[in-house]
Length: 155
Image (cartoon, rainbow, N blue to C red; front, side, top):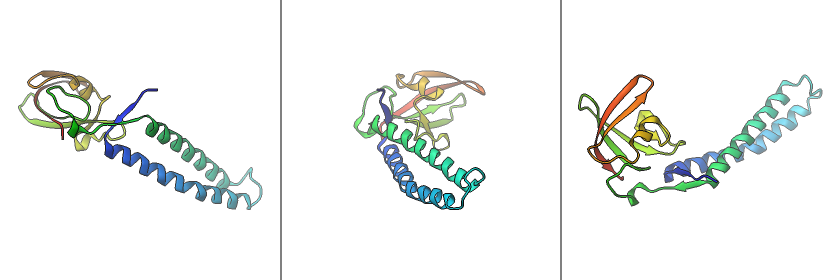
């Protein structure tokens, strides 16, 4: 079974989401019972909507339980070295020497707008294993980008 790397905050978010979904289960059962009491189920939109929501919630719970059971929590502050690895915060210089900062995180924690890239993203895959002062070429939908690794931090 393949481990799912993530930071502690990503793990906490998954467990919180799971708790919310588990709390929703009894409410859905109540909604199904109430809709069932209205009679004919073949034309009962409330019943079908509640059953559909129940299926969605159960699928999401299963997915979260799977990710949590395979979680490999990584604390970047315990890491060190001169290579880019999962959890590292990397400062890059683009073609115009403009600094860009990214942290390589798990898929559930990724948020490009906040500079948090999934380790499966094209930029992160190009960076992992590289060292300080290495030049990196990344093919993204808008074309090829070139970066110079300026700083590697484990914060």
